[in-house]
Length: 89
Image (tube, rainbow, N blue to C red; front, side, top):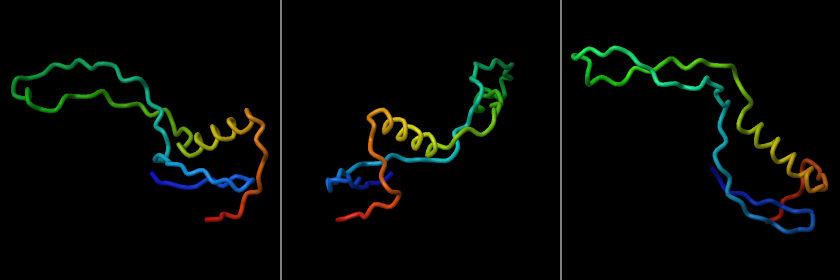
């Protein structure tokens, strides 16, 4: 997480608070309740869980965020800016 400032072409600056952007999102099968026999001697053990089936690597959180920002910009016909805009403080 962090804070930043977004510089607009007209010189305005918008402060923002960013959330955590992590790595890949696991695409897993839906977890269903697991029923297993339980011996009395194991009554206090942690519950047994069904193994999670990995369905492959999905896009990263950052890729999803970038895609959402691109769609939002297109939806309002935002002007495309150069990749490196001078940042003033």
